[in-house]
Structures are given as C-alpha cells and as structure tokens.
Length: 445
Image (tube, rainbow, N blue to C red; front, side):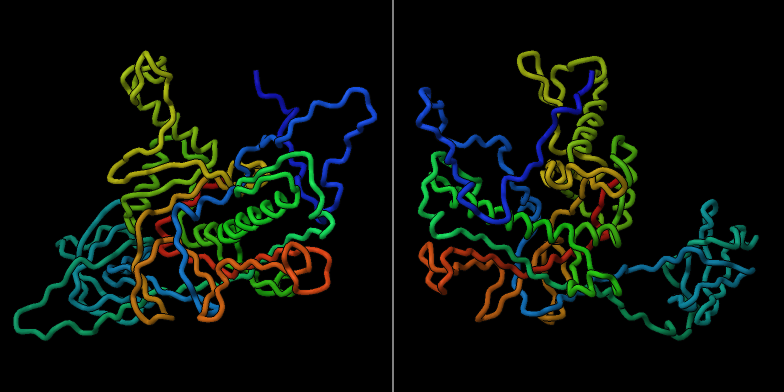
C-alpha cells in the first residue's frame, strides 16, 4: 500500500493582487426558508504558515552604514601543498613559501618520508632525504608540509620571513519591499467570519487579516532573501535590469563550504563529514536544519545502532519501556568529538516553498556551526567577535532601515494625500554575513 497521489495538498493562494469587497462573505440569502448553520471562526487548516525560523535560531542582527560589507578571515597557520612534482631531489611548486633548513614531510599517498630543504628558488626547492636509500616516494601528486627546522652550530638564522595573508570577503545589502492596500469603503465593511493570524490579528474586519498576512509574508521574505540570495553575474539580464543580488547562505556554502550530495543515511556518511570538519575549524557543536527525509534517515540510522532495533521494541533503550509509546525520534547525538543537534527546517518541508521542489540541487539540510568567530572588520578597523551567521542592516543616526513600516493615504488614520485608501508600506535593507563557510555543510541532491 502507498499514499495515493490524489487528493493532495492545495497550493491555491489565499491572497489576491488587489483587495476587493468580494473578499468579504456576502452570500447569505435570508429569503431561504432554512438558513445555513455558519461557524463564526475561520479554521486554520495549515497551522502556522510562516517559515521564518532559521535565522532566529542561529543569527544576530547588527547595524551597518555602508553599501558594501567587507571582512577578512584568517588563513591556515601551516601550509601544505598538494600536487607537487619531483625530479630527483628537486621539488616543484610554483610560488611556494618554503625556506632553506626547514624539515618537511612528503607523501605520495602510499609512502611517507622526511627530508630537509637544502636550497630553494621561487618555484622549486631541493630536499635532502634523511634516509640513506634516498627517496622511494613517487614523482607526482605529492603532498608536502613543514614540521620544523634544523641549523648547524655557529650558523646564521632563518633566511626570509612569512607574512600573514588573510582572505577577503564581501557582501552587499539589498532593499526588500512590500505593500498592503485597502480602500476606505472596504475598511468600513464588517465581515461575518471571525479571522485571526499567526501574528495575533483577530476580529471581524477582514482587512486586518490581510494586513497581518502581508506583514507575516514580508517577514518570511526577509529570511528567504538571506537564505536564497545569489549575486547577479556580470552580463546577466538581471544585472541589466538593475539587480545586483546578494550572497545568501546557500550560495556561500555551496561555493566555498562543504557539500554532501544525497541524503545522509549511514554512520559512514557522518564519519566522512567529521573527517572533513577535522580539516576545517573542528567546531565541536553543530546545528542541523534539515528536511523530513533527512530527519527520518537520521532517526532510522540511530535506531539501527540498537541491536534490538530491527527486531522490534527494545525496552529501556532511548528511554522506552513497555508502559510508554515507542520513541524513535532523536534531537541530538554524539559522534567522535562532535555534538549534532537536529531540527526540522520548515522552509524545506513546506509545500509552498522548497518542500515542493525536486531534482538536482534540492536542499536536504544545512549544518551550521554553533558559537562565534573572531574576524577583522574593515569598517570598524578592529577585530570583532560575531556569530558565524549574522545579518547586517542599514542604519545611521537619522535613518534606521532594519524594519521600516509606515501608512499613507487618507483612511485608517492616515492623512498624507487624497487617496481614498490605506496603504501600509514595508521596507528593509539588509545582507547576510556568512563567516567561516568552510565549517558549514550543505546537504543537497
């Protein structure tokens, strides 16, 4: 048996481009002998319809006064080269930073050997092996790094010095707008159904519901723009149309973070991620914001670690006993030296957003490191400690564009012009800063 394809969820929108009097229920025919039995309250069949929650859990907001946000992230302390070639004792790596008298470890993927750098040029360095038999490693695809140095008695010091070269990153804020409008006549019309919204609006005036839904929809747009934003490529039609775009977290992690393809279903999948994180910042605590398939896959994987999990209920494991319902859901687990906390990301499950998308690039989840990161802010001119994810919004002493809303028109208490309507304007200018993207993992098909 399987879940039938029809009937399925509805994607019919509850909103219209223009608010009309037809939004109000006017179909009551009192000439009929039998009047309909009506419910005064609107049933919330989709529950909480908002999807904005991701940035609330793992982000903070800070003001900015510029059109461009720039920051630097420190590079690695030690340098290892891959793909190095060798001819006898001469190794080639264009632009290397090795210096004479440094001791190095060399590997071809099978054998690991050691030597000391005897001399160097800008693109080559001569390494004397410590072994009497000389080098037995291969001549290509070598990995090499410095582990120390050795000088003879009475000699001069190290020739040459190293300068720290940080990586520079930037992002630009975008302006996000929305508007709600209702005529003065419709504001004076009373409906017959009591309405309410997730934002707390309620009553028998339908335009209040529409106004609250516009605000909730705008709140969702603020988050989705920071998640989905992409920069307009040079020469693109979007650039010609005047859009510059912005770097959302999915775009940043997909380009300079870690990407796992498919659904993580086995311990081995997580072990591969752990080994990658070991090579990055090794952040011990991580949050996983995932869709339903990935969430169930993790539950099944962890339940299978119980030797009795496949044969039925195992009392006492996972706090289950014969007097309670079996709990096969997990919110966190420990593997290696890492802690993972998982939560369902509604944005990835909702049928009106990414939950209804399939195919290559379908996002299954995002692993976000917990904690903060120290970076150098070029605007402030000093080191600052910020969360790995945080939002920068435009603000000065005279203008705060974090979340602006104002009313125009001549209805609803407004008296700005002669328009017989109330217009509620929404505006925000913001950008998402993703620090240390190398510590993030994007899970996608």
